[in-house]
Length: 78
Image (cartoon, rainbow, N blue to C red):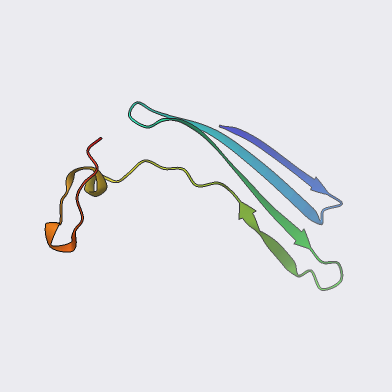
């Protein structure tokens, strides 16, 4: 995991995180996250931006191994 943080004039805060996941069954995936925060002068209001981040995760154990035929759900064992 790699992190980078910076601030400008004690008002704007930026952070970046990068992570490399390696799963034997599902391969490698790089993910990142970039949250940000701005403090408005005078009112000291904090405006926090939604973090930009891609989603990547392996299936759950239920998704891999549990079947629910009554609901037409069958596990993906591949």
